[in-house]
Every structure is written in structure tokens, then in C-alpha cells.
Length: 146
Image (cartoon, rainbow, N blue to C red; front, side, top):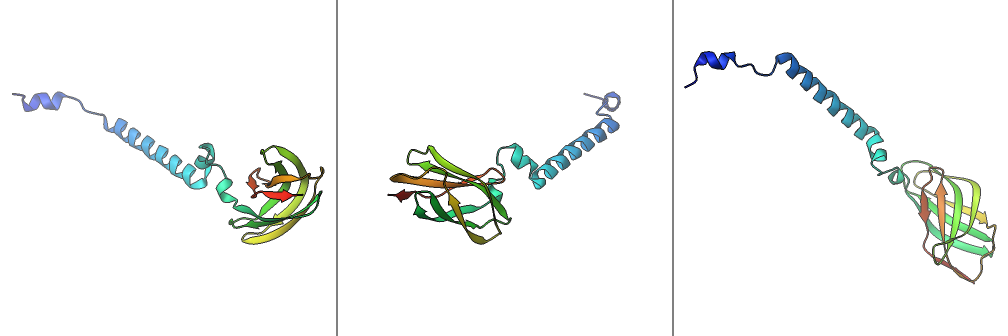
């Protein structure tokens, strides 16, 4: 049987070392909570910022082989800026694009964006993608020309 004296002679974890471990765990937990709440963790994990921009191409009107009007809505909490439009053919290949746009759409608003294409449309099925200044693309449903 173990005597009381032998139990007292055994050393446990030093109180100073235990306090240091608890402080380290607390600091690490605080850093993780800060990264999560600031959104930094989401961007590192690839969850990105696409959830912050909620844009939809609601309608496309074709006025001519080089003229389109896109009705674009922004249902997100922040203002978005459309900087370009990409027209894709039925195979998903980029057919033509329009850059240098500067259309700003306020939160919970709808805007009409008129674009002049650099390459005339031929008979076929196309889709349009609007690109924001954050680099996010939002694709429309398909539309036919011709």
C-alpha cells in the first residue's frame, strides 16, 4: 500500500507551467474568434466574398446585333459596381466582352445597363455575365438572337 509520504513526494504539473498553458489556449481561442468574426477566416478558407454581392441579371433586351440592354438587380447589403459584361456562346465560350463600364447599383435596387458590343452577334443562343469590381461574375439565363 502506498503511504501518504510517497504521494507527497511525487511532483505534479508546476502551477506556473499550468498558468502559461491556460494563457496560451485563451490567446489562441481569442485569435480564432477574431478571425471568424472579421471574415478573414472565411476568405482564407475559400468561402470568399461572393456571398456579400448578390447580383442577378433579370432581363436582356437585344436592340441590334451590337446593342444590348441588361436589367440587373442588386439584392445584397452593399452597393456594387459593374465594370464589364462578357457575352458567351451556347458552348460557354467567350464570344465578346465590353470593358470599362462604371455602372453602380445601390443596395436593393435595379438598374438598366446599355452596352455596345465590340463584335456583332450572329444567329444563335447566348448568355451574358456581368463582372463586378470585386471580380465576381453573375451569369444570366440564355437569350436568342436572330
